[in-house]
Image (cartoon, rainbow over all chains, first blue to last red; front, side, top):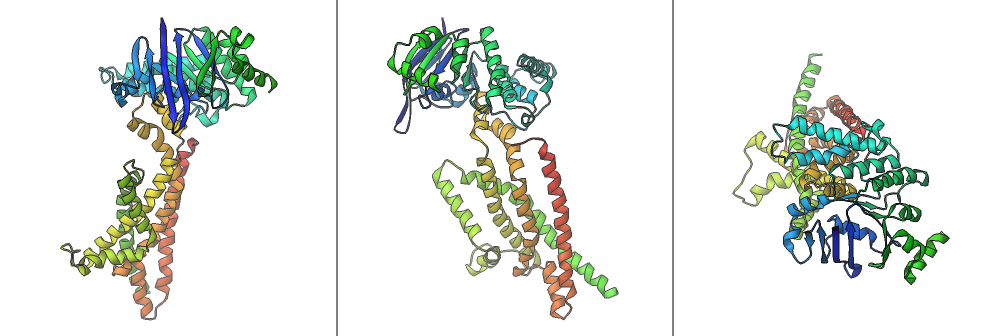
Length: 261
Length: 220
């Protein structure tokens, strides 16, 4: 059964139609790579899933629950959105860590704020916060940063910052983890460590949508590849199919251009 | 010798008026400036327009003129409102004029500070399920504070010296006091007033540097 169903998503900015009826679904434990040239709508699609943009048409279904429907304003109330967006986690291209907090606090902050709504927060404050701390430390060790808990973001490298951002996104246990070109802002020698972490997550069957320009990585990690162009899903299939024997002319052109670069 | 001590005592006493005006202005203008900043960033157009026009008028006219209008305006226009009689009235009028003037300048510093925070910081908070209030207080506020400490420091230092403008509506502050001596031919008290301002600004500079250093543990 699909964990995520995206149905007929459309989005325009002014007169520019960025997404033209996007449909796809995602199975639990599956990793999809979304590829395509700049301006094809990949990032906008991720932003729609994370409620950073509001689609003009279409709906988003997670675990059979409609979490967004453009026709139904009750799904768009701010308090509702805040709850429902937690189905998704998002790792940004530019990390967007909070500079005034330590690495550990970056990971735990949101969970601590959410815990305040816990009915027994006052009585069990210590235990709850301890649990959040422990989980934060566990996640940071998972991304190989146990040594950096008390560092501030400016003290660590870009690759390390992005790994913190991944741990931060995982801290709220999203159903689906989204990556928006996670290595595009990194020096080439730092991309490896981030890709390794993502690959690790894929091996643990984390459900992921990865927007990327790293074709080798997409081929290596994804169960399925979606090629987008000009706001539509042109082609999708296993990495072998899309990279090996692309059916559509536009896919072939795109991949050929990539090989030349 | 005795005369020198008397003059120093009177200068010091009149400088207290400058100090009081300084403190009261900061106390009220710092928060009021924040309100004005939010008004000037409001999504509600008419409010934004009114606030920005007001800021333009206040920043576009001399503080000296504003003092005169605020103090004499109510009487000249036969308003039902009037300032209390004598010294206290002059002081309150001056304080009100200073608060309005400085709140407008500060609001622009706040606005610049808030708008300089990368949108990614808000978005990171949003996708982590934070409310707008949580994002403001837990994510952006400290970054804004760090960015605006130097320009606020500038305003604060300017304010120290601007307080002497209050003498245009006959508040007996330190320059006016010294002026009374120079009118009688004694010039050194006027020069001596500079020392008061220098010492005050020196202390403020140390304080501001300390705040900046406190916030230097992170980069934003």
